[in-house]
Length: 309
Image (tube, rainbow, N blue to C red; front, side):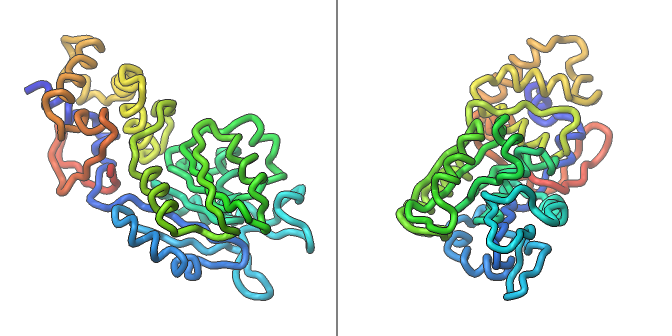
């Protein structure tokens, strides 16, 4: 009985973040594009990733010749040459207001993800997976980038890209502690060939990396959920369980009031071994589940308004 309670009694801060919805991918277009134009490019990718809902943002700055940009630059200056980006706060606000499990940027949208991760300008971004397609070096933020960035990232670059040279994308990828790189033979576009689709699915649906940040008490709920699941699927399960114990609410600890942290860790692992579809049975093996309806925990019914899955 207590092992079953171990599975569900994560405290309200976890339970209140469950949902029936799919995981969300936020897509950021390149300079001159829009959310609508990017959606057209992504039809094959949407079809290949039915596990996700896609949302397409449009940059805040309109170009004279049509389309939009995430920041402004002096005439003839490229993003990897500029000393500052004009109006970048408005771009960050667009992304900040569209919390997602995955953010997928192309060209200027990918550059934005690079420096947003480096500057920690968006609090929930650390718990999301990031795909940076056809990026270049965000020169105004090179000091922050060269200090290193944490995050689960996939960097996609074209071997013959003559818009943003691939060495720029490689330099950016080297700043991240858990970066994958996929090279396609083409130029400055989002590839949708079989190899690229396989790479996207592997990155988005695979288990967590071995070096995963532990959840923090100051995390936003979705960031805490993602970090909890990623750390449980990582190499140091005991460290993840110790952090869950530290962050757990009073209801959770009530069930263990006569026991110790060691007993909790033992029970969680036994639950995982005996109940493959329990929270710990799924999380420790790097899998996800979705709650199909509201459920009751000590203290009343929990409204389901976010997502694990």
